[in-house]
Length: 131
Image (tube, rainbow, N blue to C red; front, side, top):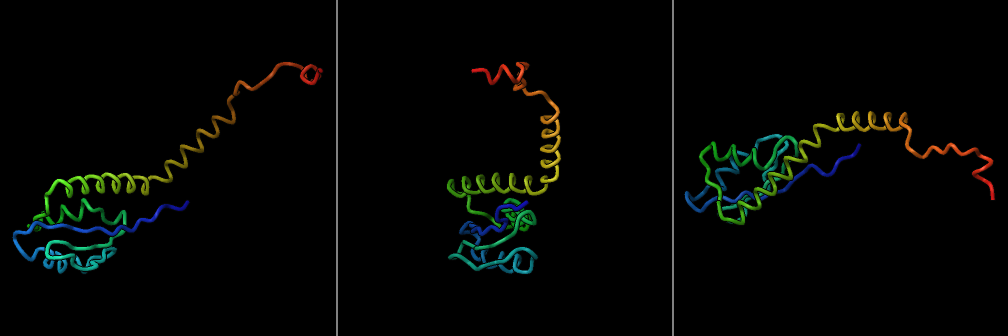
């Protein structure tokens, strides 16, 4: 079963104070496997590319906050983050549960095959073709 692209490119936006956070985050993140730092975007942005389900934007940002970084908390960035967090969370759940979905589909297919469907007609065949 093929899945949608699991590679994500995102911009991390840091607050203006303290200065130099984007460059410090670049140094912190550049050696992680399945994560590529593409470069800085201005003084407060950092472009990264990562692969689901190894990383999600939420996990990366929480790890940076734990290290003392301050993210830009403007309304548009909060909304963008919430949307990305939700979408990536759902996709990660879907990536880790395909076998369960396939088993469930097979079970329902078997039940459907063995169940009378209401399309059974007790009319004798010769009467069905009577004209």
